[in-house]
Length: 118
Image 1 (cartoon, rainbow, N blue to C red):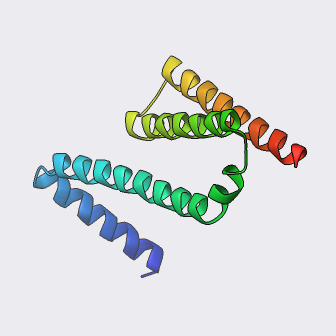
Image 2: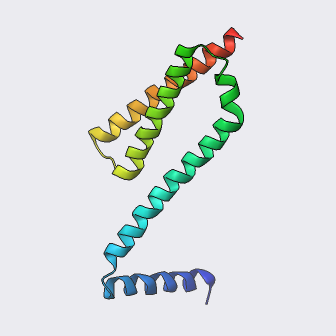
Image 3: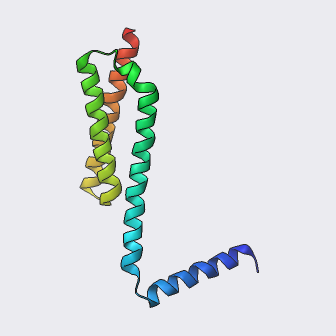
């Protein structure tokens, strides 16, 4: 038996157990918890990157530029969290993409302007 067939049989057995024992709610809950854990893991990585590299550079910027940059970053975090936890479709998805693009543009433009001034 090839490993591919063996893995398909294991997956089928797990699916049968979930259906027979009526564990769909537990699987949905575990999926939601994994989504939340993934968002938290991304946030921790971004925070460590900011702490090690970004904080020193941004502290030299004018107050308005730093405020715009941090506001764009905060709105982007909220937007990504809404996107990942909400399961967006239709107009909500379009709005989420437009907000993410606007935040990215504002952050990049502010960063680029401050780099060109130095």
